[in-house]
Length: 217
Image 1: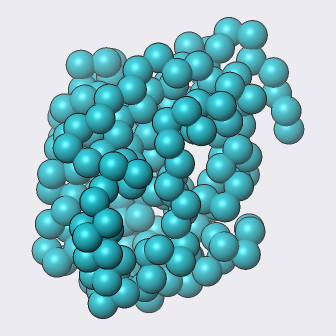
Image 2: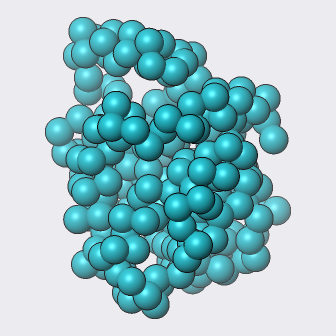
């Protein structure tokens, strides 16, 4: 696990027991609803889905309520986040793992989601290549993250200040990329951009695994 991932794991370990409380989840009430509304018409009942950086598994539990027959998996590098997730669901498969080496076989998933976490990964290209490896042919990767470059400086300053007050310095651990930068990285992992959308101050990005996928591992 990369040093940056170790640092974020430690920080999230420290807030795992309070992560499901309203003060942390207020933002995700909207974010998760927006993601599920975006995905639900394109998710079949028998899909196998992996959520990377799943935290306490709240997004997976919400999508399970919409599509009850899904096979759901979640990974997170915080042991305590995963321990909390496992307390509240025995129908979702959780594992402690970083995103740069996904602990699943090639061609395992119909859909991989990264909800509001891509900016934390130190080696984003390695993460994208792992997503490409573990997606089935024609499988999709969905990334949801803040359109940081569109934020007014005043709002950004408020977000950084709030993150320091609530748990840790978000700015210190984050690197926000523009869509074209993510697209360029994804192309090296044989992932093709098929849809992008800005909504409010967030981006919805959907990639599809190319049929001529090459395993770079």
